[in-house]
Length: 102
Image (cartoon, rainbow, N blue to C red; front, side, top):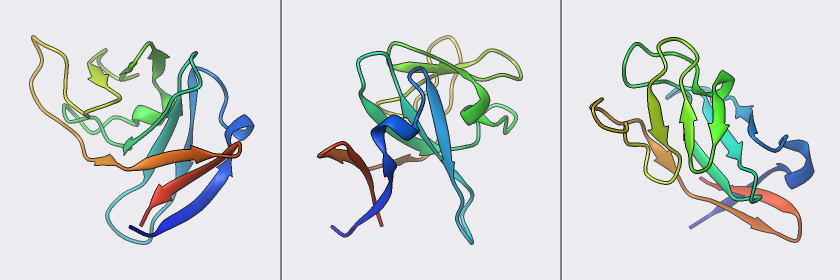
């Protein structure tokens, strides 16, 4: 797998995100939770396409800012009773730097 350096871990606010723009395929939201775990999802809620990067991060979930759907950061799945999923991307942290699989 090829890895692309995205940013330093400290560049992603705890309980927040950073958006990685792509030429095609939609943007990727890279999230950091309170435990400094990092996750990457397609920046589009499966419900109505809301920007997950603007949602509230709690534990290993993000709440969509439009209609309150909870999405699992580790699998991209909507939390029941909601149904749906968004794309998930491999991400890793090494030496305080965040890398995204390309």
